[in-house]
Length: 366
Image (cartoon, rainbow, N blue to C red; front, side, top):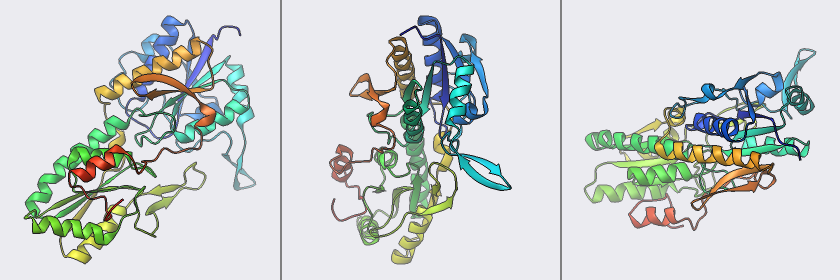
């Protein structure tokens, strides 16, 4: 195979701390050590569809290691295989992947680095099936991407959520309230579980374990009987009661994941107050968890991923995603990742740790 001369890079899905650190590492490594040109694609797959790109030179990616967000922009709705267009006054969805490939060919783009989560990797897998050479980099605060132990962005989001729990502790203690903190994570509980343990939450509710209202109220009552006049509940946005449904804030048609979760903390807080008579308050952290400067751990991990992606390109090893397994950077086939979600298993050590220090998981036993 002839040497790759030009590579595109995009950030797909929701924004995340550490994106710029990955862009920096990929570009600097490719430019300096592999002598490969780098093209930045604006706003994720939307930029590929609309042919909006710009060259990335060494100076363009200097000074962005600690900067949150992404200098390229992103989109969590753009999908080359399901793109909305207006025909005869109506919105229809078309497959414009051939147009994307034509744009890449016109730019001389011989490979594509896709930084994103499960939705991005699913689209990357589809592009691979059409002959595009792809390298994936695992990004999501949810930490739910199959094939890697940790995604970048998770550590920062967990730190933000844990700090929020720390701050809410003082208000809960002062006013003798039950305080619920709703944490992102969609259908996986990693973020809530990690932040809940780090913040010393009294109850942690995750999507993988359907909660029992009676068990939660019993945990609150038990703390009262022990002289603890407040309780902290960390609840994942995807948590739901036994036999119940997810709490959906709105539906976005045309999005890869059209259900926007949110509001479970408010609903559950009202249920707890009605059942126990204890005053409750709910705080939804929302996109606060996505913003700001990445933690040092995320900066290091992002840089390792970026260099790993560049090394795969230099070695001609395509259609793989860099991953962290144990303490080593490895790579896994993207074909094995797209469309899969890594949830918290019932034998996860963190669940055992939470229970052993007296944290309720919203059920009598797991």
